[in-house]
Image 1 (cartoon, helix red, strand yellow):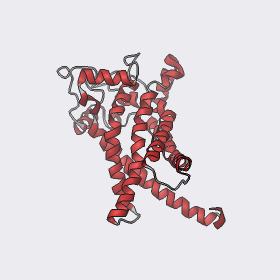
Image 2 (cartoon, helix red, strand yellow):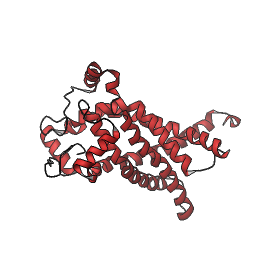
Image 3 (cartoon, helix red, strand yellow):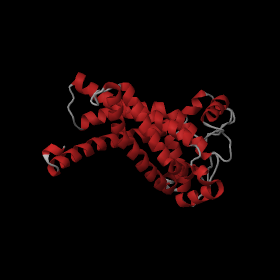
Image 4 (tube, rainbow, N blue to C red):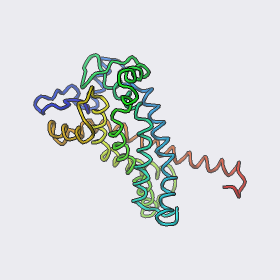
Length: 276
């Protein structure tokens, strides 16, 4: 849906997909269930690299930056938290960018109802070979700037919002540590992430999917999109994005909390008391 009507005036824009439910229905009817799972292999690898960096680097970056600024790593600073979230997200985006590129192109391809530029790859490996063979390593990192902006935006608010809401729910509503607190905090975080991250996500999808040099860069893509299609064009596909990012955020952050608890218990059992 983000590619629908790309660089076309409102009067000329096709309406192949009227919404998320209609889009899924049309794809399944024309291409089967396989159609809605295009690029899932590349998506898995991208998520491992992205979230491994984003969740893994956040706390070390936050603790180090807080200690440098305040002299105490336990201090909670919104500014430092936002900086740490954005930095860890940018690292993850850079690491996983080639896989997101392949995923975007595989998902954008449709033999029945094509939207936007079409790239006919047999699978993710074929996509890598094709891009590397024609464009080299630089081609695999096409759009990485947009990816870093997109993930930097999302990560700058995801973890800071989660921990901010969590602290407020504990302080003002007396909620205790547990699944209910994690669910409420992560749900709020998911909504905020989608609102902040969706415009650069649209730009990134278009830059990844382009052939040649339709867009010179992030700002060129943004200006052309808004000028040709209107401001709301950067929010195309918002509902499908929300339907993906909300459960993703809830599950990621809730499982991260549980994993931290399990690891802490395991360390206490295995390591001597003085070593923790």
